[in-house]
Amino acid sequence: MKLEIFFEKFDQFADAPDAVSKMRELVLEWAATGKLCNTDSGAWKKGVLGDVIELISGQHLLAHEHNEERRGIPYLTGPSDFGEKSPIPTRWTDQPKVTAEPGDILITVKGSGVGKTNILLDQPTAISRQLMAVRVTGADTEFVHVVLKRAAEHFQNAKTGIAIPGIGRREVLGLEIVLPPLAEQKRIVAKVDELMALCDRLEAQQQERKAQHAALARASLARFADAPTPANLNLLFHSSFNIHPSSLRKSILTLAVQGKLVTQDPNDEPAGEILAGIASTKLRLQKTGEIAKEKPVEPLQSDDLPFETPESWQWAKLAELTELITKGSSPKWQGIAYVPESEGILFITSENVGNYVLRKLDALKYVDKGFNEIEPRSILKRGDILMNLVGASIGRTAVYDLHDGANINQAVALIRLVRETDGVCPRFLLHYLNSPTAIDYMLASRVVSAQPNISLTNAREFAVPIPPLAEQRRIVAKVDQLMALVDKLETQLAASRATAANLLEAIVAEVTTEYPVYENC
Image (tube, rainbow, N blue to C red):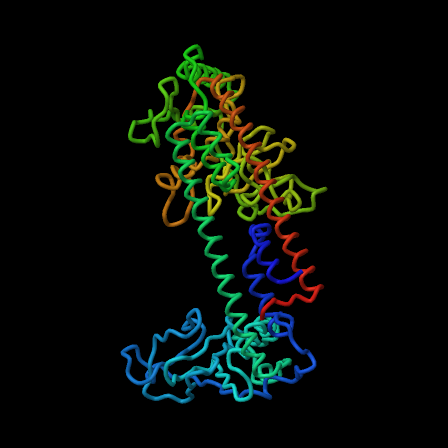
């Protein structure tokens, strides 16, 4: 297979991760090893870079020895001053210690940018100890630059040191190279420039296509948000462009909890009657002592509501829907120790509370059984809802579906819906609490700024939209259906990327095996 065909096949593996960067790596590899052009390999000579260069090590300047007022000559401190091909200075000095000359190749030898290169074009320039200047004496400068760019990963792997890892003169001067005759070096450089320009065009086309797809995706999301009809829903799963699965999930949840995903049915039992039934059941359970009495919550005000809902919906505070909202405590505060699983009770922390489901179940913690005697209110039952109250995962909510009798720490709230009622579908509540709408509402108005957290008071007063029960069930069914489609789409996207990556790998292997030369080089 000729190298031209490799570029012609680009569209087949364009979705592979870093497809263009891989092509650039291959061009440099072939250029430096004699596989890019038709060549007389017998004329190539093995050696080390030190055979054809002088190497100048930079020196550090103190703060008072350089300036930003353009006094003196430019002073480069590291790869932060590098441009695409040549440096862009931000400091100058009239007290230079080590100077690089126009035409020198600058290479980074210390820090995270080890191996990065630029060519100095304009004027003598002072360089810091992070840089060395490669002055080519026995070869074509651009060809040596190709060799150095190909060796960037090698230099990264060769760096040593703890505080500021880097490479020394020995690593640069001792780099093994194979050098063709001068005329061939120039032909190779010309072909590398041509192929790199082609890579630039392919990358620009790739970026333009991504930008177009992103614009189409945004337009489809906006159109669906404005008019969530079945026809517009199909646009979200259009075959000609991909909306990122995470964006799809957020959009679906946002529309679902705002009453825009399914139609309202005037025959549904009104939400107000559902809330009245919950309140009646809760009062009865309190009178019989089955649940604790609570301080009445103040009615929601219109200013407290995060969005408008359909007329058949009604807002309620979370405490109106629950018989218990509480949290656990720290075992250390209670003098309770962590113990092996066989000796204790399961202890759920905020790390275990994911979106919808518990996570990290392979690293669960257990505490002494005495913890349940100290914290009986936070003993868990299957079906309880758990919400993270602290940190980056604030608001993340899951259903507890393990065995009864576990407990929680102080960063997790236990939310238990009123028993013996069928007014709030737990799955709908989970959809709402995990939606971007609810999370934004929590972060905007229910978080203490000094330490990101939600208090139990704020959790109890959190506003929840309540549709008619029949509509809740329709919403849950629709969300589950759409989320299954998103899961399928995500699998297809992953498979497509894997296929593209495998194809790229296969083509690279084929091209490399068949000694890829570029025709008319």
